[in-house]
Amino acid sequence: MPAWFAWSLLALVSWGAWAIIGRLVDSLSAVQSQALSTLGMLPIIAILPLLSRKEAQRNPRKGTAIALAAGILSCLGNVTYYEVLNRGEKAATVVPLTAMYPLVTILLAVLLLRERLNRFQLGGIVLSLAAIYLLNISSAEGLFSSWMLFALPPIALWGITGFLQKLSTNDIPGERSTLWFLVAFVPAAAIIIALKPPPSGLPAKIWLWVLALGFFFALGNLAILIAFARGGKASIITPLTALYPLVSIPLAVFAFGEKVSLREGTGIFLALASVAALSWLGSPTQPQAINNLQHEIHH
Image (cartoon, helix red, strand yellow):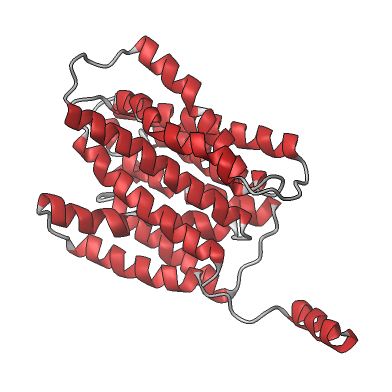
């Protein structure tokens, strides 16, 4: 199993847990949960300087700046997402469409990073997007609504974030990229808390869930950035890790007694098929095979 694939699976599991925990924080608004959960990121932020590998860095300043920009855009994406939520029930019909943000990352990675995919991986991307649609979007109503315009900002911001995360790991290690990505959330959390203070006297249970929320979010981002740094392609890793409902749906069945609908069951089946296809490396390309052969002849 390639290292990038193992780290991608860790990101998928972490975000699956994050999605379920978010449902347990029911006494806070979404934006307050976002701000307070930053406290749960602090342990990972604290240990990241110790985890950073000492290796040659192509351009530390550039990589750091890109990682910070990715964190800032991710925060802005969250804010625009919450703004859609606050616009009422009609706007909420388009919220699930924001799960299609991997489309933006895939397009940027293929066009700007010149990432090449084999036929199995291309099929895996198509399957994963279909699975993401089925697992997140229960109705096509939002697709044909003027409210869809409100879904475009978070889609664009989160999609660009994934692209920038990959870009930053071309210059600095994944652990250091994660550090600066998460650091960007700290001032954003401080501003949110100052503008909208959380209610006093929160139960210890809510604090526990909020801290866990931030921890699993940070762990997922650490895993995906290490996956990028280990040679994983953004056009593969982003749709792969967006399949975290593979984890959150079974957890919801166990924790809340929910039933899996036919639509969700189909989405899970397509998701599993896409995971297999996305991880298929195939045979080396012809130029690479020739290079390997020449290397063996000369040595």
